[in-house]
Image (cartoon, rainbow, N blue to C red; front, side, top):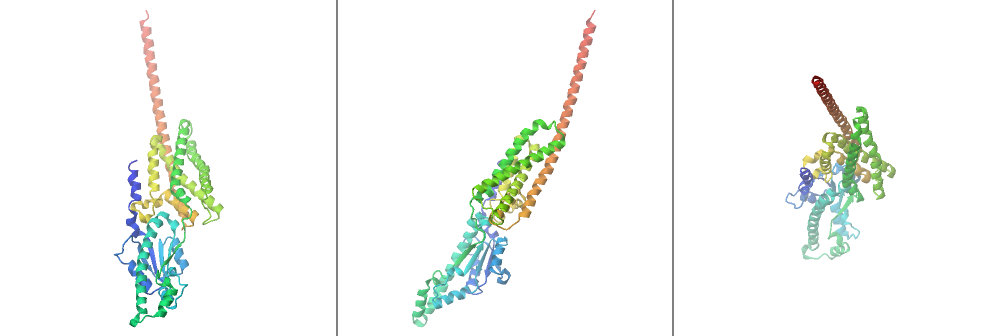
Length: 415
């Protein structure tokens, strides 16, 4: 049990030191002072705060705003920072003409998908982006304003017209430039936190209780059953039991207004969600059913605890914010169920086919090990029964011989 603690502690330790693994795109459509200066500042190794893995993407390669948004949703980057076309020129023109409708936030657009992982985006990604933009845009806008104001006093003469135009559009001086955040997949269902993390622990507990109850009911009668009958009971009973449990779990989530219609219509989303809950229970539950044969009900709780911790550790943070050791989670049930649930509830990047395949793989592997362990257990029982029968025959034979000796002694004593 104590070995499980460092396994989970290590999964959530020092993610702020790994923010450089979060891929970020910088797309300079401006091609002028603002875009160039921002990129130079981003590349400044002396910058303060957490750093992201920035890449300069050619504007032609990046495509349209829709293409950039799709790339972020498709997990090609955690965030994309776009300096819009003509941002520098638009600011200069707004100052010169006193354009009161100039919007500083139109200069830069930030794209990200919060629902990809709300903890990573909320605690590490967006704070890093916000800090970077606040520092760089403030410094650039201040420098740009100073240069423009210096021009209004050129030759020692005050350009009253220029000052009047600035008075009409003060936002061209402060803030000058700002940014718009486009959250492509908002995490707008707080209930999902319970469903994706703690809820999976509940599902593991349900399967554990089912395995324990099944073992207690099966052991007294399994000696009287054929091997095929034992296998049928061990496989069919839990798989049937998981059906109402998975539907009930989904109904409880529905009762608390978990949205199922982000990617598909609500009805299809509901049943697809229930299917993945069922696959999760089958993957975890059948593993417990198999191991309880080897470990017996006395020691299966230790395996169950390790199974839960090893799975949930990989869900707490994304791969990029964890040690490379935890990449094993990509092949574990809870990791894949959490991805599937995010896709159904928030319409994040879909890997549903792969997620289902991995869960089915776990269930099939557990079926194979269950058959093997049951056969081994049955063989041990039969050998034990044979030894017991042989010992009983020997004991009976010894008793008969002893009885014959006693009878012979009694005959010898007669006159």
